[in-house]
Image (cartoon, rainbow, N blue to C red; front, side, top):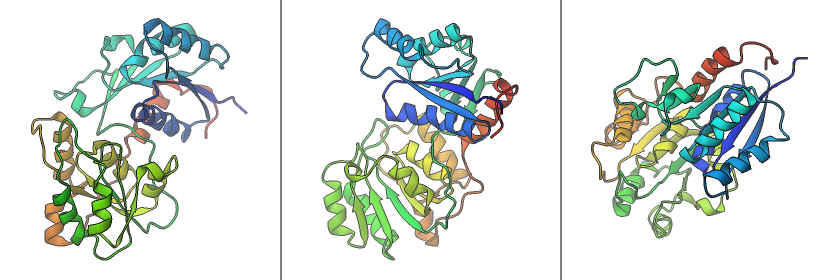
Length: 306
């Protein structure tokens, strides 16, 4: 049996960044035999401290086949580890350092609004994530609520008013996020009696991906861009709940509008007309597509096919 490919994932302690890196690593592992090694820089402040932490953590690890990371603070450590181990390095999201220093950059389309034909840049529809469709029957109905952000304001009363008719047949669960205003869940409990309200403080690790994997229909507030793409990656039918926009020219929001135009998500205004969340034209899981390219480009020799 051939040995597995060893993937080093440099992490900065931010869940969103780690979600992207491990989403790619997981997808690679669905194609070839791998072992994933996390190198955490969390808690280390300053350039030199992070480099020392990366070198110390890597000292006892098997030689990597790939080194990858997301988040600007990880980039110097990523480059150092890749150079010392003579392994290709992959950066997720557009780096602040020169692109030519990395073997591959995987980034959302909105990071490169004019597009690119560079072979060392792979553009994706949204950020990568770890959500995949479940194997069992899809019965769940889930509502994922965000909160105020740089691109969006907040209208709790308007959101409740939209959710009331959308959930009147029962069977729905609603969960909030770290950005959700503190009084929203209490308002939802009062105004949406048929909906099970679950605070994100009370959910175990991995609850959202597992629940999405079993969901048939999902409503997501449009400010929660990462959750929109995670819901699409689960294979569920996804409805989009509007909240007030602050930045109408945001590149990220143009990506959301593109999902509406191409039929991947059903806007609430259309649901009001049809009373139906439409199925997307295809499963949108960019981690799997990127993993195919990464395996073909960097891991085509040796290793053990999964």
